[in-house]
Image 1 (cartoon, helix red, strand yellow):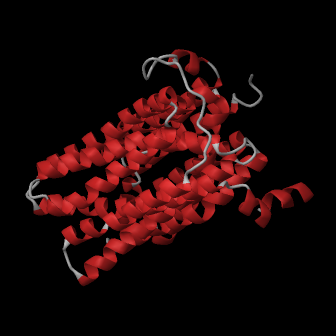
Image 2: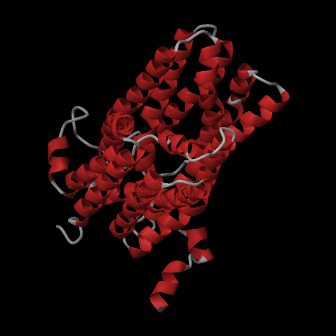
Image 3: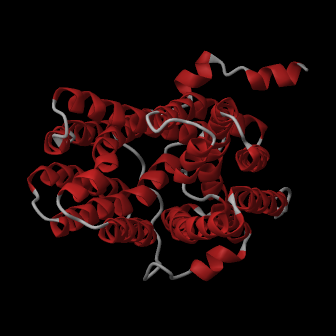
Length: 400
């Protein structure tokens, strides 16, 4: 009981000292950049419709954008390792996104939106793997889960602030999407200032001799990292778009106006619990916490499959935030634990690539099952795959 009490309480000294200055700065950068992003992109479908874009074109724009980001994450991780320029690549990734979003205020055709959305996702693809490698090299194995949990918490807080800011602007300027896009430049540009001055003095991760993005990937995938990545792939196939959760909420009686509140509440809870989840992963073991997180996901999806009242959906959204808190820090910390130091950029690139590529078939499969067999079957499929991933990752305990 005494040890359990120690695990439950996160001392203030640990919170203050275990998160390095550079990680705090990267967290602030993610908060501001995500606030900027979430001011813009929830409004893009409405804006595109006002420009005359049909639904198929809107779907194509989003599909191309996300596929671009996934492919570039693989490339940018290798390039950062090869050049030893993780900080520079991450900065230019944020800068590219910051420079393209306000230009949406001046477009007049859907094709122009496609171009800007493409470059924004190029920025995301460039920065993600090098940034995670910077967090890994800035921390020790003892506090790496806490650092990643803190970073994800700040990111999720930004995802809550962005829609609130957009809603506030639209209250004073109804349907003035262009004004929102222009003002979204403010937090994005501030994030660049914070990055440049706050992420300094970080030791560069070891340089790799790999000649192309897939060079040495076979060797990297042979060991524990390869098995871990396979389990992440299985789980990602279970992790369909969260839009289905909002659809399910509507099925059980949630009014349309409640959807943004559920979404904002989910991100706020993810932010509130994320630091504790990362800290718990450091104290109790990342694989242990990850397994419980994936088990929580299976319970939540089973619950969504059979939910029949609004209060049940609200409770399930709260438990869904617990799943995120338990897994977001642990998943990223395990990449650094299983991959050699000189290949971490490539390892994070592969990790984000697998997650990004598997997200599309996961949502397509889920949607087909829902349409063909009903919502319970689709949610139970997701729960089953999550349990399979949980069992698979258990093999890593004590493996060499």
